[in-house]
Length: 336
Image (cartoon, rainbow, N blue to C red):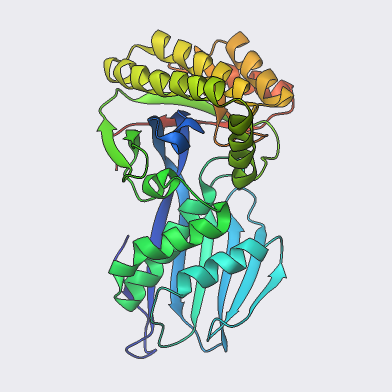
């Protein structure tokens, strides 16, 4: 967060506050983390930035724009008493409810104008909702001098987006750039420890529109009800893979990290959360030189991440030839 910036001749309350939230990649542990298994995730250098200021409008307003194409994704409004919400443009029903959930945790003396720019594709497993929620809540908390309300406000917003979130996305959105190991026993707090890995270069592509995270988590839960022993065994494999990957990342053993990514992807396929497009994108990435590739996020569509220690150019070119757009990202815990 940056410090508030006074605006010229607009009175004592006329200030602008800013908040930032990071996007994320789950490198290991999707779905199994819901059942108490560990996970490894990375905070990306990119995410969401919110600008918050007081407004003379009768209602609170939020405008969400994409930095990728500069389009307005949605404009939403909440009544000052939070008793009504409205959408002016885009697909913003859940955004409206999430904005209201955030506002409900702050004591707002005036209505607010919130402008958000998001730097990653939305709804494809990169933690865009958590990045947005953290950015907005941090900006509002800073403007109002109520930073102690931020965490609960973000949690309320994430419950709107995902039903019963694991908490991992929220923690990643509020983190510094880097790779982190997450562990939690049933009904206990999620604990996080940084992994001091060498700089990690990855390629990411959007292999298709993602399904709802809540829907995919529920699908796995239903499969577990039918085949509890088998699904628990698969989740154990995923958790063991995350633990092994933590050590391999620390050592910079990229060949092992890549192999573990492939193993993790196979286990996720057993849970039923991969798609034909995701599997194809993984296959293309490996054929173009990636040391490993897997889905990232809830699955049912969404993104693929590939390990490219020598650079992502060849993988990105191969993906583009199949119609998948992507980007390269380098994650380094030493960067700000």
